[in-house]
Length: 259
Image 1: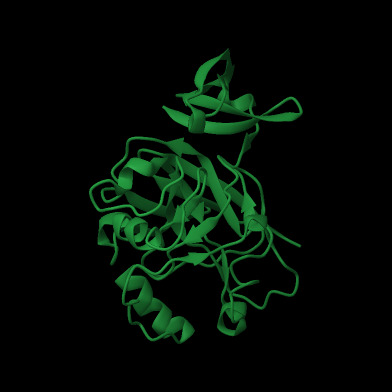
Image 2: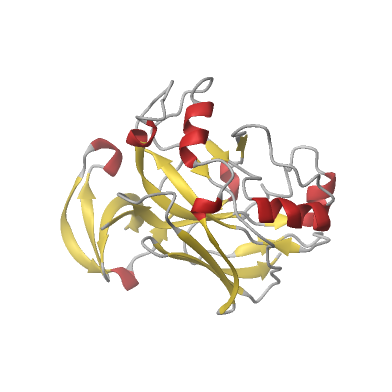
């Protein structure tokens, strides 16, 4: 079972996805909503981003192979942060399943994709412990942290490099009941595998990020936390189709266009 947001006429609604069908929910999964509407073929539904986060967090450099690649390709130090060190992204970059990643006309490139596990926070929390941290999680979805690498070298806050419009595909839905340390993330460009890694290889676990973050910051219902990627990241150009698959969740698919 998966929870999704979709376009129902002119309004956004929540639904439950089961196989190739969808049923509208009464209420939302954040407030104990239940499926009670008519069954529809999933293929006939326009999916939206699975939630609109009050705050969009990003773990960033959290895998050793990615740090090593970044040191060589982007001039980083290659050293991991001293603790689970969270950052932020902007909601304007969020797009849904099958919506186009648009590369700005003045992007110098390369533009690359980073497939990531995304956690969705299900209730407002602060001061989490290692024992109760995962209790706040509604479920997990998929993110694609699109990155313009020339801008990344020069933008002090990554405001364009990772936050340009359409640079944060997320979806297709939220899946509850998964172990965030036992998943695999696979990236394909035009059907060819370009990256594969295990979430259990992260330097800091998701629990580490939850505990460290909530020492100082309140997490609110609907917040999302993107958990970083591993290894080298593939280039994309207009005309490509990018797929990020996490078995147990599904596949996030987006075409690439030029501005």
